[in-house]
Image (cartoon, rainbow, N blue to C red; front, top):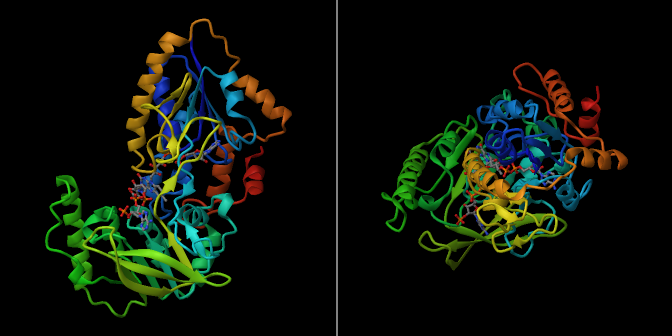
Length: 435
Ligand code: FAD
Ligand code: NAP
């Protein structure tokens, strides 16, 4: 008997698990539910618009969407348009792949002030996620970015690039307009630990050195000759590369470039201050590359503070939630009978796109083993049951052909040299999806 599977979420985890199930369970029928009208999760809404090579993975995902056993159901939020319980009634298996959509919080005074943006919101704004379309960040004079991961590097790079450097990207039109008009003179990238313990990686760090209008300011005295012994061999190798690149930055003298990009290490945010909006941030010096704060304070005046300090998943459909790790509670991917989790909502907001493939392969093996024992005698109605509910509720669902119409509308409105001009409002996306 071929099982009917609902996948919730169309990011990398959703596609890799669909693909793995198509291979391991012959005849499987998989419906992929996605809250946005557009597929691909963070590949569309997170990966930097100037990293088009990374986004090319969607060609592989589109082959999965074209498979006769797969249906895309975009513009359907599970929990809003249809419930998790209804999916369980309809399908033999539900795989939750909802990612980690919320920004982690600093947990310090003042962080709720207008002008403080989480990376999910800020990146979502420049990448055209409809929820953040009207963020309208104020990017005058000085912007501070907290965090030392690759997301923080993406953000400072997009802030620092000139319009010409972004000409071949799919940075959204509203973000191009605001960034183009901004009067940024200083961007600060703040790490709470030392440069050897930053979690960004060498290729991404090296890219900062190619920025045409930014001069990188980093204190050479902070750049030790060797990574500390407390790191693992793998971490030491990564840290050695990063230190080498940073020493290269410190030795350069290119004062003609108008934008100062300050890389500050060993500073943790202590408080955000302001009135009707953020006006600045106080940073506390940390000790010896660790997170132990000292009494030494530094204040930076700014009207935009962007935190790029990681993400949290969200409780879903009444399933058990591990609030300490902010993930759907699971045992190797198994959540409860017939329900599984995969990707960032299963293991936390860490890892690049291919890491979700290995995750999906492992979860698919588990599902295949469980299905052999559990499907006999069950007769679930499958996706048609949910189709009827969605029709009764007048939910306008986006199938693969409708996504292809959106895709071609975005491509055809792009200026020469740009891959696409994204539609960024739900109404525009739905209009473009109609035949
Ligand atoms: P996601 O990609 O977040 O997908 C989750 C999907 O579920 C989303 O489409 C969401 O809309 C949907 N969803 C959520 N709730 C519901 C619901 N209730 N009903 C229906 N649908 C729902 N990795 C790289 O390899 N290279 C990069 O350059 C890179 N850049 C990144 C940049 C940023 C800013 C971030 C945050 C991550 C980046 N990554 C990159 C990491 C990569 O994006 C992740 O590993 C990957 O996207 C995680 O996949 P996922 O499917 O678990 O989650
Ligand atoms: P990350 O790599 O975990 O980095 C988070 C950063 O935030 C760390 O520097 C962390 O410092 C810091 N931080 C956390 N809490 C903080 C606090 N309260 N105060 C100050 N700093 C704090 O996560 P990410 O940058 O969000 O990236 C997520 C994943 O996506 C990563 O696996 C990343 O590699 C991947 N990604 C890849 C690419 C790419 O390949 N080009 C691009 C973007 C993202 P500590 O280390 O001290 O905790």
